Image (cartoon, rainbow, N blue to C red; front, side, top):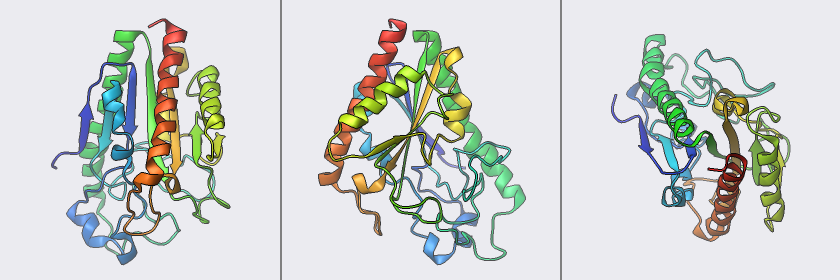
Length: 267
């Protein structure tokens, strides 16, 4: 297996995770995909570009290189469902619209999927865990921002149009409520954007598993509507005219996250 993730170690107590930004496919997955899946429509498109200011701020950043169609890094390794109703698993079998992801009989084998778990999923989570431990040892706490995006209208997954900024803290379990309140305030002040806290997206496995306020690790997931920074239809083009004001809000959210941490812990 070639490079499975990219990692930049920063100088602040903030780690940004991008588990669904990858575009690489294994041969088995590529050969088995149905035609409508070949453009990788369920990707969290352009997330590294959208957040490219974060490294300049001093944040650590880890991003997946392989597509979620190979293995979903935001699902637990035992594939326990995270959401009631329609969802996708550790090894996705359907597109977001509910259609089959693979041609009949051409899914990766059990042995191949075990390889994906060991060689793609585990290195990503080892990197997450080790960096969070390092940050907590250095600063006394760690802040985890799980960065996602999704099309704003997917009837199979949710009703109507998704709010622009979907903050998830696993119903308050993954971070201090005071941090969530500050982030909500930032979103409320952002003109022309809508937001919700713990709506349809409450945080996936990464937020739920690593967020542990009692151990001074605070995790937040942001599921961003892709209409805020790109065209949601093929070829899924990045729109700088949309992205620039969205990036300003994202920067403000990360700055407030860091400011809260410094105020709470004095570091």
